[in-house]
Length: 124
Image (cartoon, rainbow, N blue to C red; front, top):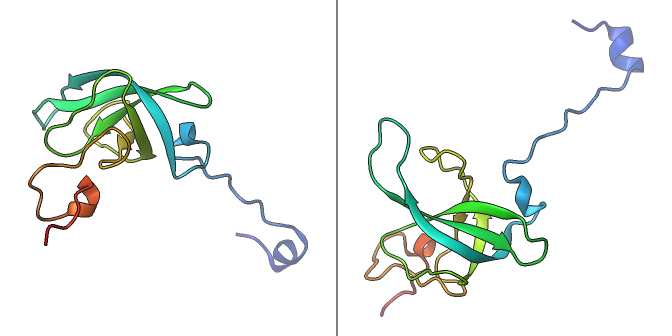
């Protein structure tokens, strides 16, 4: 416990917060090129094949893995995508996701609810 004397005359040291998505360099999203499209299986209690991509940023050529949200996709090698930071708990080593409806990745077909997450426009 600090005394009153210590509180008045010593400055508090701010702790440096570690970034959750360090490869984005403090940007909300970044443009990347798809190197490879593959599937991996998640951690223990879950069982499915999750679609992921290995990507490379255009500017600084840093490589990373990102998850493709939603059902189905049209990505292939050399597709341009937009990547943002996301916490994907059941995939080891994956801490980024791909934004749907931008560049070469289409939105999810026949999506009615939660359309903004999956890049689908409203049908009137």
